[in-house]
Length: 508
Image 1: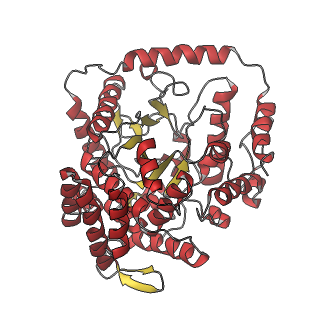
Image 2: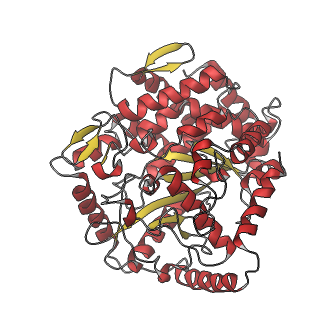
Image 3: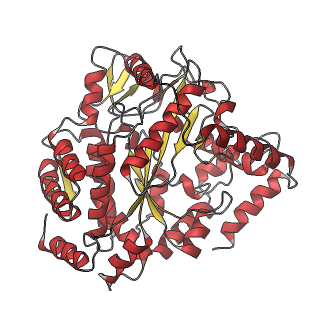
């Protein structure tokens, strides 16, 4: 796999000075459930001491009021990124009393969906539409599935590095084509992410609560002995309905068109739910295949930063791809920040490989192969006899990874980054995270082992917290901003949702 083409590509960008002043910008979004001392999902309000989840840039909530999302600023240094993420965890742990941050991707045990309280964002329409979106997710997929947690790794090159890369590739028109080529390669090489970053081979039996599945019972738990990431399986954070969109990432226009089509095309299952509840209040933003762009469940997404009420698809069409959001990463239960710094190093070299490697346009056969490979690897990725489809061949996954390791080491040679070389050798030689999780729960139920382990992780934050990043002030400022936002509302929420949807309809 370490072909002459890759070597030539690396030499080409080296000759332009790409590696001399390479700057990668990285950020992390980490999800985590607040769990009570009774080992149940918290029903308490989002702690005021953490600020407003609507107006805070770094501490917000996802689907549930108990599902925290910690969002770092972006950094060119892995050390600074990890330190900021760890500091966020330290700060949060000082503000949640005797609650614990659940340090696994698959959630704690549930007695029923009624235990899960939707995230609330106040009475402003900006806040209400976020809550309505979550109401729609609950109606479409159930609340328990939405409590699955993960890591998003946001990756981009600096403007200078992009310019050098593009100057060395005259056939690549712009950064949109550059990043979309990387996405196509990432999806081809997705088995690497699913195996080496997967850490969810088991779940509490209550997670599926009556849904059909292919998992094996283990006491009150469900698992597969060679699974890597149930989170990324069909019983995880997925929507088979979205496969109808046939998204290929071959060019930005077709991707945008597919998103617009997904949002504006009603789906019978979602039309049946209705747009309003019995009192006339919106219960989903639309009845489309997607309510909004962020409902697209994929292992990676092209993104562009903007204001909170900007439609992401508008930003992409008007301003182009700003960064890649890598979503197929499980929580690392063995790191207090949910992701190790060595994992960041491994992601960096993998994503650079995705950028540098030739990237042909995808066809339907390849798209189906990608889906099939993912289904195999999430359930059986540690089976030495497993084969996956690459092109028109079926090859052993172990052989595929051996060749991929050679490619990663080749890229690493040009980076001159000792941490990256160490990370490649460590993860390819060591025990997979998914296997370590099964070792951790050996002889115990997942819910008990998970809680005990999460308590032990919290105990690592016993050192007095030094607020060097000003989290206290940011929390207070976000509460003030929230107060002002709630007092300045004029538009009826139904009209607001209509105007929000019209932005997309005008793009058709």
